[in-house]
Image (cartoon, rainbow, N blue to C red; front, side):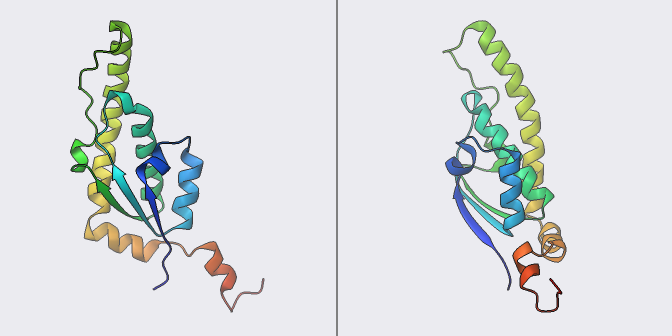
Length: 144
C-alpha cells in the first residue's frame, strides 16, 4: 500500500498563520491527514474557523482522506450565535455579520466532511488520487 499520511493538531494547522498555499502543499504531499483536537469554535475563533474551512477545501479538492478527532459532531463545531459581552455594540454587530458569513461557509464544510466520510468519496479518493511526485521520480520505467 503506497500511502503518505500525516498527523497534525488543530492548533498546528489552524492556530498559526498558515494559509491556502500551505494547506495545498500538505494536501498534495499526503494521501491521509489526521487532525487532532478540533475544538468548538465561536465568535472569538473566526480566524481559526476560516483556516479550518480552507484546510478542508484543500484536502477535499485533492482527494485526501481526512480523519478528524473533534470536541463534537461536525455540525456543532461552529457556534455563530453565541453572545459575546466583551465587545461594544458596533463591534458585536460587525463580528456577528462575519460570524453569519462563516456559519454559511462552515455549513458547506460540514457537508464536505460528511461526503468525505462516505464510501463513495473514499473509493473515489483511492482510485483518482494522482501519484506523488516522489513516486513518479522513483518509477523505474521513466527516462528522466
